[in-house]
Length: 310
Image (tube, rainbow, N blue to C red; front, side, top):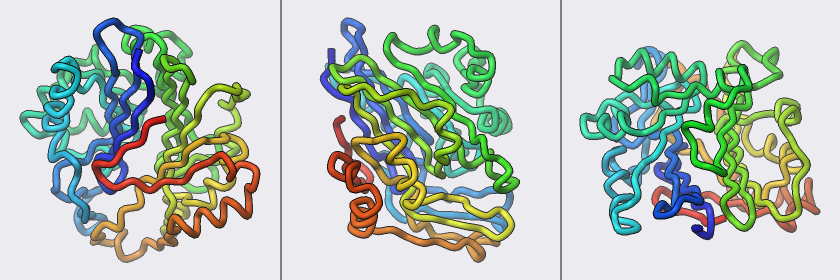
C-alpha cells in the first residue's frame, strides 16, 4: 500500500493531479486530474469580446498526453492517468484546446471522465468522441444516491459533488459555488480533499459534514483572492470564506488555487474586481480569527510543478 496522498499543482490557475493510493496489488496510485488547462492557448467564454483570459505561468506539462507520459515513467511504467474530472462548464476548467489535442484525446478515450451536470453539457458541446460508458455525471449520482461509482472507482476511493444550496445569492451562484469531495481511505490516515476553486459556503457544506475522526486528514483547495463582478456578485469567495470554512471543515492543509493573475480581456476583464490575499496576510488573518485551528492548519501557495504529500 502506498504511503500518502500526493497533490500536484499543474498550472498557475486551477489544474491539479491527485495521486490517490490504492489497495490493488501491482497498482500503487489512482491518478485523478482536476480541470486540466495545460495548452497555452487562452480560454474564451462566449466570445473574446465578453471574456478572454491568457495564462501567464507555463503549465508543468503542455498537454494531457505529456502528463500521461510522465506518469508512465514512474513505478516501472505501470502508472497512467486513470480519470479526469471537470468541475465547471467554464473554459478555464474545461479547456477546449487541452481536451481537443489529438494525442490527449487518446488518453481521454480510455480514462474515466467525471463531470457535473453543467460540465457534462459543455463537454458534449465540444463534440469530443468519448465512450459514454466511461463518463460519470456526479450530479446525477448524487441525485439518485446510487452505486454508480462503485463500478468506476477503486476500493477505498470516493468522489462526491456538493452543490451550492444558497443559490439565491446571485443568478450564477449555483454554477460557481459548489465543491467536489475526494476521499481516499487507503492510507493509514484516511484523507478527504474538498476542492472548491470558487468557494462553497459554510451553509452549503454543512449538509454534507460528518464528524471528524481523530486520525483522518483533511485538505481544502480554495481560492485565496476574492473576485466580484457587477450584477453577478461574488465570482470567487477568496480567503474570507476560507476563514468561515476552517472551523467547520477543520483542514490540516489549505492550498490556494484559481488565483493566477491572468491577462484578462473583454468585458469581464474590464469589470472584474479582485482583492488579493498574500500568504503572510492570510496567515495573520487565520491566527487572529481562528487561533485554535491555526495551530494545526498549514496554508500553502504552490507553483506549477510543485506538490505536497498528505
